[in-house]
Figure 1: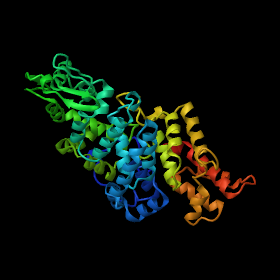
Figure 2: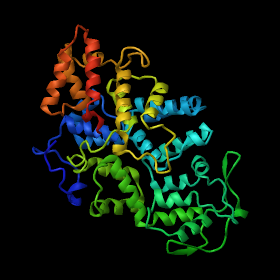
Figure 3: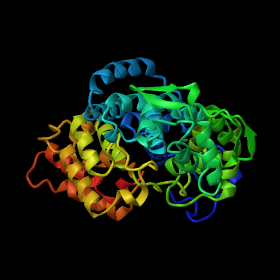
Figure 4: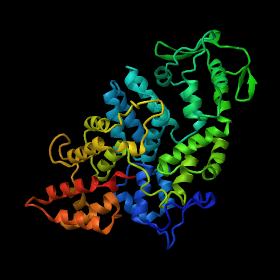
Length: 456
């Protein structure tokens, strides 16, 4: 995808207009793969081929509103979740299994986004059920209203407990929740003062976590007038959230974070580029509409966004599994993903995971190679359930040579420099006396460990 200069700044009018394929910028397997990586965890061969047939806009329609029975899937998952969530290990495994199986990958991808946005660590709670409800809450609002999600977070037991905001007395206002709310979740540094933090904490007085429940004690609420972000009144907690949502900086913060998640994490977007999306988002805080604008846009399908994001460990691991059309042990996978730096349900700080280049270092790169080897090995710990040769045969490729070319298209959409592609294909022809299954396992491992595959 070299139809534009990567370093050329994007005009906002062109950037957010819907991409329309043309001779200079055709709809292609590479663009379809890009869409499935960013909106989910990568596409299966059937999904990629269907996307080529449907075109970009209809494919985005399906990603936003899947034709499959998502409600039935959710009910089945919720039943198994109730069993699995007795422990944090069970909850992590359950969530990864859901990512591998879901008919609505965009919903899970956005749930993962909000998990890093409203970072809460179950490891410090000693109560997996609280973390279970926290993730459910994120999912229920993942493509809904940011305003409703923010209000829900202000009553979320897991978050309040983790932040130390489990008691907010009139005589001792607690800013453990309102400070990260203003600094990290909404306004950002420089858009509020210490006086605003103190007044916001007073607005939140009366809220407690008692016996595993979030409760409001009216006698502990400060009923006096507060002065918050230029407004004056006898504000309560919901008023504070409402006032924060009225500030332009809140929409800008959310849009920038989502830009980094869906568009690019290598270049900081200009204020001019973000402005139209932030202005539109501030009107109704409709997350689905914002996501849709980004996924349909010229900028999303341009070289400025293509492979400009490092796959997080979850994306890397789940992507291999989904491409190979098979399930693996989610319990084992959760442990291996945690070893790569992304311990689900246990983000390191209130700011979530740093991401980007921080995902890749000497240790984690070796770890990714080891995970890929384990996933594609015929034995333990994943029992050979991911079988590249079987997938290639299923889609009509009966020789190792044809299967190798197919795997390049499946995993990288064939978008490689000619010399890299030739080197990889030559490795597939060096069978060393092995059968096609072993040869293709070794070939798939070579593909998913090259630098290009680390990028979303």
